[in-house]
Length: 241
Image (cartoon, rainbow, N blue to C red; front, side, top):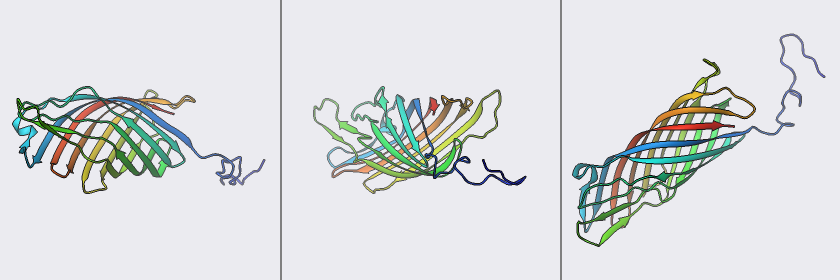
């Protein structure tokens, strides 16, 4: 056992938690999110079907989406996996119809700063088969379906969980923003969540959060163009380990 003079920190040894002797931090989280999204913009252009606007020409209805997510963290690096279960399609009247599909998404985080559950860093994501649009005329069996290529994005994230508690619970806030990396498929997303987290135990912690998501998508294929936007509110149950 080593001793330090009064007022001085202990030397950096294995007993003090030296990274040379102890494994890196391991943790993560998982959530189950229930979300309602509504289309706020939906312009399309096609050489045969001309052009139109889903929002101006028809009434869109919000859809419910169940989104589970798992994040695994080792040291300052994290891997995130999502899969969205779409409980309904955006439905509009004829002469056009369109449906939006939310599927698989994978991402990685690099934390530049981390203290406890609070962290700040950069993130990279890829979203596959993220959106699809179907256009057809009333009474016409012919239709045109087009969808974007995989959407690659880069962004930043900020998570803040202060150390103070009120009735054994502490506030927690998370913001994620990402922007497109390619010109053909431009996906931009802003995601904000706030809630209360239970105390940390040997089995982890739980949190109840609510928040807001805003998505914009602009993509082009050989014959078609689409420019859309969606936003909505969500609630979620989060487990931290």
